[in-house]
Image 1: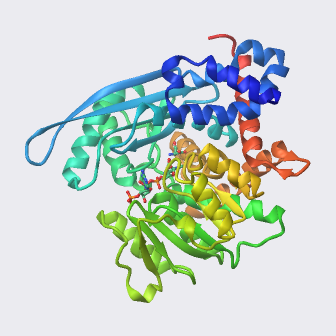
Image 2: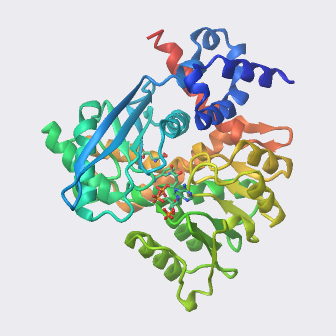
Image 3: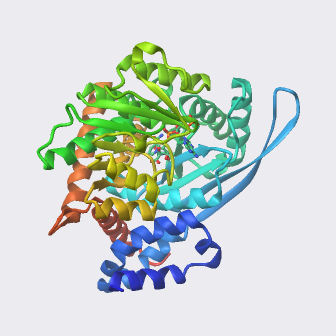
Length: 447
Ligand code: NDP
Ligand code: 2IT
């Protein structure tokens, strides 16, 4: 066993038993520790400060009940959380996820990852995540509004523009952010940037909705540039049909790629010659209506493969943009067998530990979500500045700033991850994020 693995095992064994039982948190922590633990041990200040251990321990976890009334007049109960992981380099920052399967384990791993992602943006953004086990499926607009208001009633005392700034994530988009912001504004009695992802009509940034997906493609272009390959003509398999997937698909098509798949929980839409903008618009419309994608119009040249993932189709590039752990060992092998040479994560931790081992063995170029999907939170950072200045950028200005931010993140990560056998982006992202956090945490003393 090498030194990093031995130290990582000892580190994992030192976690609180309830944390060690959180499988997603453990997976995320192990993946970071493996890359940074020897760097920490070799730096006496960072080792003495126990930087990594302090990053695993959130500053606080706020847990609350959410009570609301459905359209039938019945009282409904849900559980909500906000995990405030670290504000060492800026206000707590990270999305809110509404999904019936959400657990504290998910939000702990997401908040931990967010600290590193936000550090990589080079903006003043701390790490947090939150959400609820609320299931929006089949709920009316009025029910969504009442749920968001009840959720914010509980969360409002804990957030604010310099304290903690939530945003969207799975099932939390522009509509939900609008209801959440309205409720926060009423509760706080002031108008300020306590949430990002707002519409431009009330203090939001242009391109925030598109930023994660567009940023992912800009990151992929920076990766391909190093390999002297153009995105033009590449076959791209994308999973998901939500915010990240749709905007990644639109930008990829715009840049000349063939988007061969989109997907949802029911199956995969496969178009061997590529989906066009009309097809992506149709998928986006289906998502907005709460519908599935099983009956595409014939003109799209696409077939629906029920119950399958995109990873069984031939492609050059794979962009997982749905959820965590969607590429396991079998899926990763299938990607390799179908010709995929580059994987960049739009979702957070979509690749399992075993999946990653398969990709590495096959020498697939792999970019982790904490680098490749950082465009969303980076534009959230720009939204915070614009709101504070009371001065807003045009869509073109934000898009061009996003391109630069993603190219800079890429270069920071590639420099740190450069090794004898090329760039290890996962290692580069973990180390670059860790170094910024370690410097900030040690400079501020033991608090
Ligand atoms: P959306 O709610 O817009 O879309 C989520 C998509 O993922 C849907 O197509 C959904 O399928 C699918 N999905 C969700 N849960 C599961 C599951 N358990 N199994 C299979 N498919 C699932 O969310 P986003 O696009 O915003 O988020 C997607 C991913 O990107 C998440 O990992 C999120 O954390 C990450 N991310 C999001 C950012 C943002 O700015 N929004 C920023 C950075 C990362 P269905 O339609 O069937 O429900
Ligand atoms: O995972 C993420 O980076 C997000 N869901 C966006 C966070 C943000 O604060 O914009």
